[in-house]
Length: 510
Image (cartoon, rainbow, N blue to C red; front, top):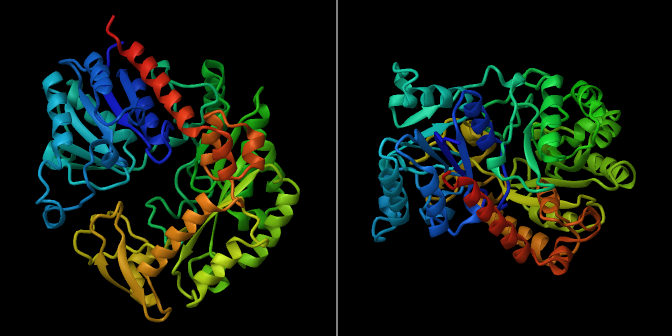
């Protein structure tokens, strides 16, 4: 098969897992007649000899472009996060050969495919334009085809926006009819958890959230039922796929949507699927009929956004249901329909109305019997104001734009942060970012490494199934107990080895 485009991806936090963006782009390209090879970089030790050998077999004089996800770029090349030359010079300019691995990669691509373009996309910001990369931001289902058509000569009149170093994506008008279609050269393993898009956008506007597709109308961006049925059926018939990570900002944003997906999609399939999804617990309380629909649809792990145990703080961020009532409802769920469905929620420290003793109260609650969640994660409130030097961000939350209204003073960007973290203090709360950050790191370490209360919840549940951990063990054993029973390092190394072996054989020239 002729390869026109190479997509390099890899989630180093959850290695050997696939995510929707890479394969949505690959599908769109393939449907337009282009040959695509995806490569999971977490299977390799950086830009090592094995990866170079595979690229040797793929790259030619006719390769149009090589794309890389910036989300975990530092894990591949050891290249630090930075957003401007000024911030780079301040922290890293004195370090010799810091970019040597990245430059070696770029020079290698150019030596094999002199005409190939270098492109990048992802959730984290690097100043990599200086190395010849064109950076694609936001959704690029349409833009990637227009750009590739230009690279191939199909369209000689390129849009002026493709001449700049960065390309701003747009909402994809055909999303409701789109699919993610995997091919054999994507290397799919038995029972692997695969990404699937159900809808795009969110009908809510939480004040801490800067997601650009907030405020959608109900049902506006939900895939057509027949499209989803066909996508699920193809995956099952071609690869036996039944295990999914759902890409949907709020799966149960309306009762009609939950019912429609069960009635017109899952109940009509001749096989059962299992999936993890973002679910709003307060909406389950309001529309209790959706509980059984969610269970029967195949929900195995739910991610809630409860965010706080402080009712006043909840109301301040647009979540008005009393957390106490939510946990009473959840306790009943865990004793009944959700007995074998794992539940997870994040908690944000430093929200408006948080009392000075909020961290102590939250810690006591998390480890108490009142907390019936199977897993939790704690994070500080992140604020990214427009006026902090070096912030490079196209979308802002209400807190970002009006943080002073809530008593927050933002005074310093954390230069080597992965995203755009900014230190804040709130004199009304006697709280600051460093306190919240230190507390969150301590809590997450206890949750993950010291306590036997918590399980592998959230999206990691489906991933652990992919690795061969039994469903019963995941439901009954804690994270520490799972690690004691299974040699996770050995399991993962074997998976990486098998992936490298298979992709090497696929990529060998005929």
